[in-house]
Length: 113
Length: 224
Image 1 (cartoon, each protein chain N blue to C red):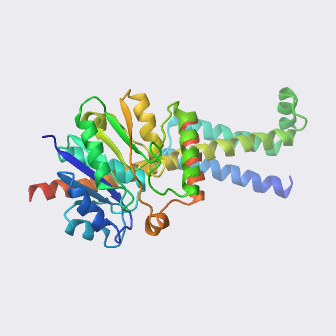
Image 2 (image 1 turned 180 degrees about the horizontal axis):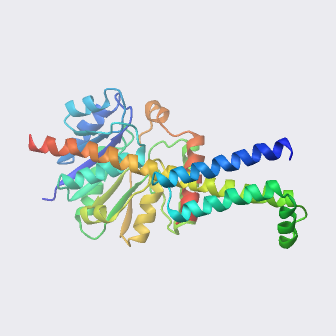
Image 3 (image 1 turned 60 degrees about the vertical axis):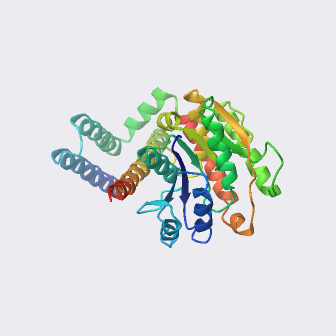
């Protein structure tokens, strides 16, 4: 086993453990836990047996196994970025609503006095 | 007579807001200033000039302040609402004409257009920015207005109740148009005169903000 494999396996184990602990604390649903577990299992699988990536690559018509990994990683990053931006805008809106309610509360006390 | 409320969103306008409020009070029953987290004396000056002031604890941008103002005006029992800029570029007389037009009862929404009559001294750069705003608004929402970015607008109570604004910042001007189209509101434009002083110009939007606003509108349209 190469040093790189050991490092990556440790990361995958940590990732899996983090997912499990978030699930225990109620931060993840069972489906989300399953998806994360599947992801880290796949990572571990590809690290231990790099040739599995090549099999997937041939199936998909992509040249090399390593390329498939990079493509998928890129797609995942774009997806997460999109989710993050959407979430950010959602938060902005919630803060605005909160600010508005606080401001208008003053209005009502104005009117009563 | 119907209750007329002028809404003025204000961010760091302590120099101009006092005169703007005093002029507005001449043509409306109430003037509601939304101090958008200015952190200076804007709210204080507006209140002592006679406005009802609500304060955003933190700055939320033009769209956020306008929504707060419209919601506040509804809670104050407004029948007709007109929004005005806080920097002094709008004349109270034009706000009055917007109210009067709404009071005729055959329209839901009025936009004060700086383009219908070539009054005033709109600088060339402003004019181009405004055209770009109009063109983008038309592309996105299929509605042509001569001044999509105008800050002087009037609406009836029922129109105000039906409009929902999601924008926090400058893109709110075009969002009004989108809502007018979607909610089938009857819109007219009335000619207004914009007063450009070195002060109101210095408070204008930079090119970068314009681009950001445009991108946001396109992004939204793609997601909806």
